[in-house]
Length: 111
Image 1: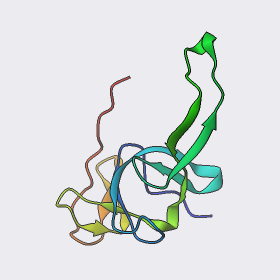
Image 2: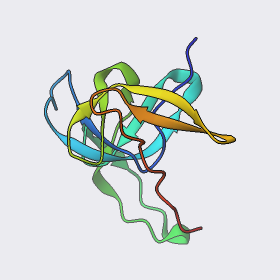
Image 3: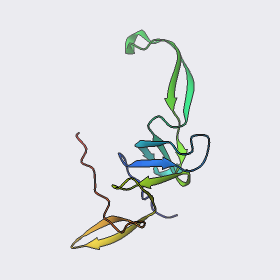
Image 4: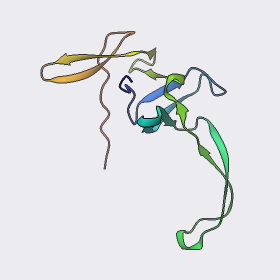
């Protein structure tokens, strides 16, 4: 099984399925099932029971559903869909856009 080249907070475009052409940010990567959760993509309705302890209202909520990793493609800094390669620069391994050859910048996340 090949390593997953898409990471959290990457921008991806859906290339297959009902949301084809839609772009969004990766919220979560589920590596063992080879799926990603993309913001505002593959929305499903979920029936939710009210829970006063957690301050949850009941009803029908919409949420994202995981989509298979093969159905999304990474969008590089220039806004183009691209496959992902790897290159060693110095002592670090970096992700590289196959379309342009540019290094894909790592996005800093606040914890």
